[in-house]
Length: 100
Image 1: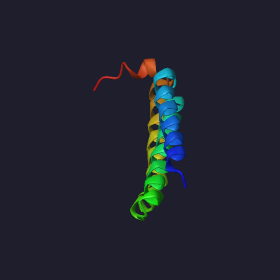
Image 2 (image 1 turned 30 degrees about the horizontal axis):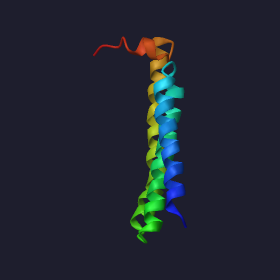
Image 3 (image 1 turned 180 degrees about the horizontal axis):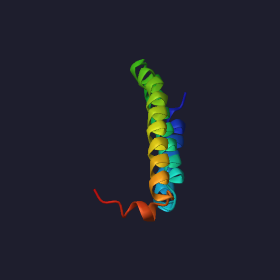
Image 4 (image 1 turned 135 degrees about the horizontal axis):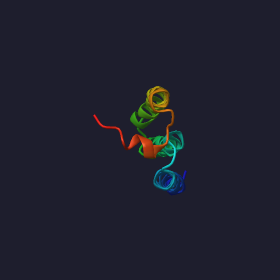
């Protein structure tokens, strides 16, 4: 197994996720999709490090990442719904005016 290929793949996914966040600042749900792809890159890095170092700890952490991603998605969806009910839109420009 050549871990360099997998690290390169994870790096490409991470860079595309960062690029997606920086370029798509119009809509919150579209901004959350690159975050999920960056979690995928972290997960694949955990798996590759675990296999290359012959340690099971990375695979254990990799099994917890989908749980964290599901919790993040549920909380984010709840915030989207509440914001849409209060403001009538989920555009980022209107959310910047929130004071509190």
